[in-house]
Length: 545
Image 1 (cartoon, rainbow, N blue to C red):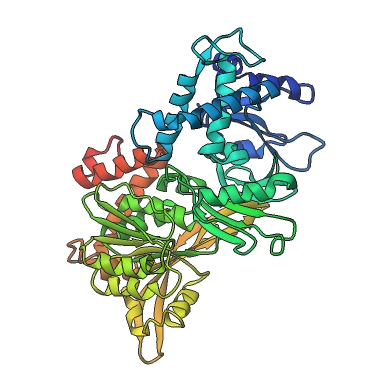
Image 2: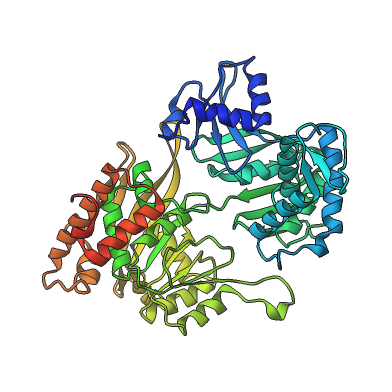
């Protein structure tokens, strides 16, 4: 159960004075919120949602809507330092910098290690004294006296400034955020996984917006200035950042977009549970991944392409070697043998390495599957070279239909000969759609590429699946007539009669149906489940099929 019981709620309130104060303030205006460790999706359907959920550490999120509000709002509840705490923080932080060269914890290479070093330094510099609240005081040994609450607040504040997202830190700790939209002089807006677009209580003050955008640009290793007003980069957690700094370009002042990186991928069964596609589509993709078919996951920006692609990788047999190439690290693969490579565009020009060069290098390392994170331009030629040499490829691509995919790959600048297009097996189109007032992500179609037709001078394709918007279902249009299942997969599965592949399709669909019935949605549980099937067969599964 994702709802937190009353006893645990009381402990959270007592352990977090900032949460206690917030509750005292809002209870003058509304009922006390329900507390959750995980947010149920159906809470969005409530007329006036009112809940608080936990994140990492001392940050809590309040989602609510009252009768006099037009939409749900997002309020981050985090420690805010008093003037006395700020004074103590400044002294502690100065002491940390002075003593940094004396740190005995070894060389700091990662953000997690830096967070740990900050905590250890604060432990060394301070002494907890519950009577030391308020005014700055020191012990005989020179340590700074703080209460346990002051220490917690100061540690959070120093950590968020040095390692985290500064005023954006609550969002960086929230697993339910997809995108963060920052415009100077406005409240930050978010794309929330449950509540869609919401306004937050974090305001971007024009007084410090310039300094903040420059500091954030330095965190991603791509400084901005009036002369170089646009920066793109990646935060240590993998989140993608775009900053537009100059007021000449961004008229209201610095603006920024952060696309959050999810530490744990969303599972294939969770996507089916949400209706992104059904178990028939899941079973089809399972067979495609199992038997080395090349799949392009296509759609518009923020349509969930990468999420779907990451979820599919669980279907690749566990013993296979994976080789991924990306500009920013978004691909997440559960396999033990996974060579993860990134392009390099910073530093001297002669040291830059593009996606095409890494893909070419990958062909020499003999991987079983090649995963270019996203195919955008001329590196698409190397992608098709990989497929021609027998390497299955899974990649994402910006296109709204199979026709657009073919046009873009056979046109400038990629210029793939039409006769090469039959190296691609499957094109999946996914979009963010509006249905009955709700914003949904849906697989709209799956098309099978049959090959080049010389007489028509065109690429022949066959519709495998199509989304029915009227009743929100997926129709298996090529059921018992699938080119990929019968002509490309059946023989590899050792079937003399190609139509027998549908028995295997039905078996895997049944497995996925049962997984949904048993609510097996956790990513790592799904990985273990599918890989048990590969190793031990259907009899080894922990549920009856």
